[in-house]
Length: 228
Ligand code: HEC
View (cartoon, rainbow, N blue to C red):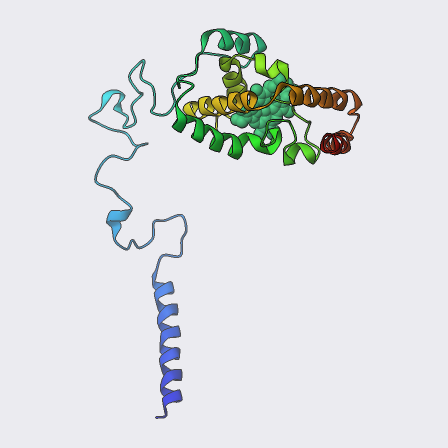
């Protein structure tokens, strides 16, 4: 027999073998089929959602004891309302001290990753997302933002405000506090004269911004800023 004839017979046998195997296995999808390594399907310990003769209530998954807190989910005792934002401003303090260089560095990273896209690297409200039509955020260098207490900015980052969405899901509380530090750093690093200009720029922007005009408004403001 030539080599290719052997191969053909081999393939034919393999096809017959596959058909025979599939015929011999249970074709009824409502019944449990042949189990290969059954230990992977039926575990020795009780499964989470099964009845349990040993534990309280006869169920495997128990409720956590009263007063326990899941790891990484420290509760924040504030609501997402303007009054609560004010209260956060009065009651919360940044757990990092202002001279914590490492926290500040990480704050820059958090800001560049999660805030800069809208607020711009310098905090002036000229991030890419804002330049492409998302409602332009007010400058973080404006007097209003400078006067917001740390806790209030933390509340904004946690719950959002107006058009700004909540960032609680993607940034952990400590990282949000570090971002607050970076906002403060940006504010301190900017000379007051510049701050005035930026503030006026944003004012006119908000007045001019009709339907869909935000993009053009912010771009032209940017150009004006550059010329100054
Ligand atoms: C999707 C765009 C977007 C992102 C991302 C974003 N912001 Fe905002 N932010 C806004 C907008 C829009 C406003 C104005 C909200 C309003 O209408 O009051 C705002 C407002 C603010 C204000 C209040 C400013 C003021 O003068 O009232 C602070 C502080 C602030 N953001 C901080 C942050 C920080 C810190 C981050 C990152 C953790 C962040 N933002 C991420 C869009 C964004």
